Length: 237
Image (cartoon, rainbow, N blue to C red; front, side, top):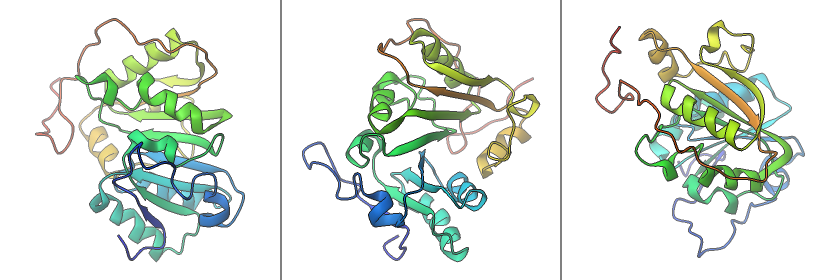
């Protein structure tokens, strides 16, 4: 990972270390332009980040993940394709507000995050993380959730409703919906696997124009299958 110009590594930063040196300066010091910055949190191999960058050269895209072995693939592809509007940040999403300044980010993509069905605080759409996103998003910044998990979709939908977030799009079957566009048609390796198993892709888009942070108190039905890499098995009819 050290050999890639597109990669910034800070896997051990904590709240005791203060803010990162690129905070508030990603456009100036990293991309060398003033174009909008879009994050993919939990980017894995960075497929979504790279393909968005290819489609939208007038925007800057940063994939964030803690696992460098995954991001290596996206960094290699972006280097081979000569993409200058792509970056990868290796760090813990828990500290995301230390890396980006107030209103520095235009949009956030959460592509197939682990639903963390037993650990609300670790769920990337929980109020714990949404408060962090609000610190770095522009006033009308958008959060996108693309997921195979009905649990994640149901939980986040209820969260949006309880806190009166501005709902922009919601569907439990993206590929049969009116929302499908060039960006949402991008498919990662894992998304293709989900679809091949007959699992519909869900999608939510919303803005955090709220003043409350309430967690759902109801129990949601858990997914009846495991994620890839965790003893995956076919979904039963």
